Image (cartoon, rainbow, N blue to C red):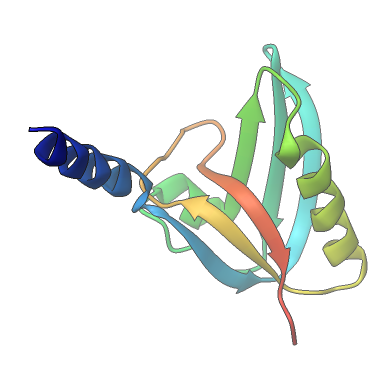
Length: 116
């Protein structure tokens, strides 16, 4: 019984993360950091279509991260995005291709400067 429960839990957890993947490389058009309605928001607009299941993200070429508390995306992630933009380096974004928010588009949870 424990084995079956463990396997079921593993499958459910794996499925919930299946939509997260590294996408890109993207060149950065704009990086924004702001607060709205109690949410800390980091937004990145790319010059390239993200190709997610989110129409607004693909149309506006934008991914974002929002939270009521400061986190990785607000500190290290923002720093990496700004550094890549200043150096005109492409980035890979760790995005959730399954989620779509009308206001903030596709969420991203990581950023990596792509090697040339």
